[in-house]
Length: 382
Image (tube, rainbow, N blue to C red; front, side, top):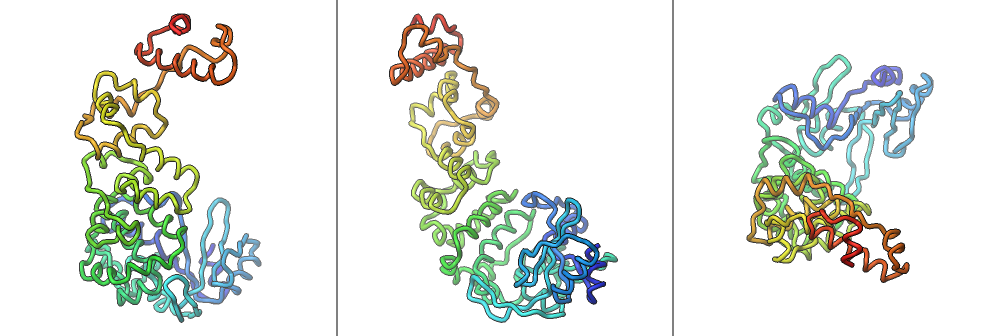
């Protein structure tokens, strides 16, 4: 449909970007599609004015959303699928954050303004792969390579520094180029020009990648941790392998001061709560209890992030939580305390602070009995 609309507008449409890259990775390397794609994102480049494409779509009664008309982009909506359609462009001037763009009918010029060779592959409607910058060779070699001059690409948009490490985290077995890394390092201070929102988005994707530890190691080696957080990433530890959420993975690499700095970024309330939760330290006594037969006495009072908090905080303790204990904590379902506020009021407690303190003591008794005391016995003990 989108191809036909491009033809009707007098030009050609070609699929480009992440979808093309990931399908080629799957087909060429028999690997998996990277996990940072939660849904099917389809991007198309068209070598006609976007206004012409828009008119042709409306003539066919196709829904169009003017998501970026002044930048040559619209979103085509068909049933449940959306396609981001962008006129082929060329950068005229850049300042590290924003680009002044011009329009061109050339797919080659459009390719040159992209970041990496593996992202500059186009596919026509008949399945023809257009590879103007040798992206297929880099896919086959598992090599992440900038298009053209590294420093020119980075200074056009400093976010490409983070995107570089994000792709290392997302793509299985892809190697980085040490020379490109060295050249990027000269421009880490340019990250200060980026909005915190853009930085957070890239960090979310980076720490969600299957190979995030490899990417983090390379970031630390290059000094990118200091540029982002004014500190050094913590030494990796073995329980990091079990961390599943990007928030806990990020927190596991940060000191308390670095984490506090991260929490000043524009994170969602849920993300801030998650990072704050897993960053809560354990006393030595509590961590020893977690490793003992009485581990439930601590786990009972944990929130939904308690399991990952245990993994993150393991870095500060010599006590080792073995695999069996970690599985027990992960699968633990806290039984409800049999005493309720209503029970305590019937027993003579008044609503207010005294009732809250009595409920706390009741819960503590229940936990210390290994969840065996009945409501009557707990109230009698109180």
